[in-house]
Length: 329
Length: 250
Image 1: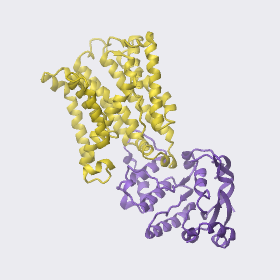
Image 2: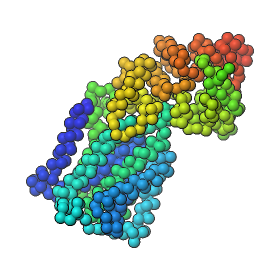
Image 3: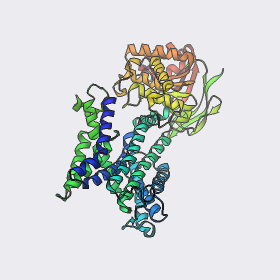
Image 4: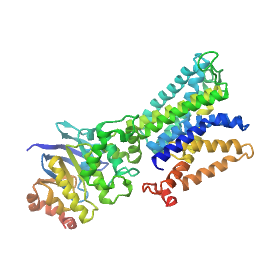
């Protein structure tokens, strides 16, 4: 896609998502406003996977750990320390980022399967810690709290569906804007260099380890924002969201939507969550269809939905990936 | 004679195999150096040791007054020592100009996450300059994975030059090139050598003897001899080493 067209599509998508709380209730589908909010939140976890896999070439199966830290930061901040929403949000995101900085320092020494394994191991360790530290985390039952007001008493509250949606929408928008800047920046080019050819990257003076670590911390930050928002959205935190099933689901969302594209993870998350909402009530084994969709994507459109559309629209551009170029021509 | 790179007691063992065996080499400054030797002589291993791609078992490598042995590749590059690879290797998924741009950013130590990469005008100018210098300007928008082999080799040289190196190691830069590409590249290397110290590994003896001022001969992981092209051509030991592989002399 040419650059102006790309930005036009992005702008339209942003506006369309912003209209959700106005249009859906008018159609009598108020319930779906919360589904849309949930999609936005989970898309940050998929975006976190994508930042690592799509932009620096590291496959993590442990991003739910940082999501979980974000959740617990908020829940403990509000429930135990009596913090307001904004400081609890900062605590959750800060905790997730710090954890990513520590885990990343070890994990990014490794690549590919070793990296994937160590990220799973980290998330398993903390899953079991959270499950057993019942007095702090509530274990399996999780930790509930009641929402403080958004800007002081009497002001808007997240208990209002529309306010909550716009709160989540705004924060997600900031995250996506930051990501758009990042991937187009010199640092983003460094990420790409490491992804494309780490040996060559080192030989032009790039510290590969440091570059991967920065990406890992940024990915932890994104997952942390997602987790913190999800805690506010659900008014609780639970260890079950740190399990690697959740991480794996985010990998699937990112793959189907398109890794290495900014909005691919959002598209993938939206499609698969909508699919789950619609089909899971009718068919118990709907995950079979999800599995088939993933296999088909990986085999026939490895750049995912957004990546493939991008390639189709870029007919004149010669630099399309191998697998899609046949489709494009 | 002042040297641009000085190697003392350099050894690399891979298990039982000694790839580079207690080598002492001085590469003189201000001339075009070539390293030759039959396959398995340890030439590429020598380059890998110099650039930190693999760690030396023992030895000292002195570049501009300090020992660079044991440093990591990106640290060595930052000191002004660049190289190209024998198996050509660039950033395949990106355009030619983005390839160079990354290297320019890396050299300028620009890591900002906030501004779009093309907004750095200074760097863009440098990218254009390097594209001109390597003759890749007409291919700037092309994806690097679609370049011909000869152009990839030129792009490699462009990446290495982005660093404004004071010493440039070229590992078989013309290997796999067509005759006309070879001619152009040899011309470029000669031009580069006027401003930058170069050490060249090359199998094409015709090229080596035509352009280099000083030749280092390696065999079986050891230094065999050093000298100017005339001395090397007349050296009986060198001839003997190459008798085992006569096609290299063609």
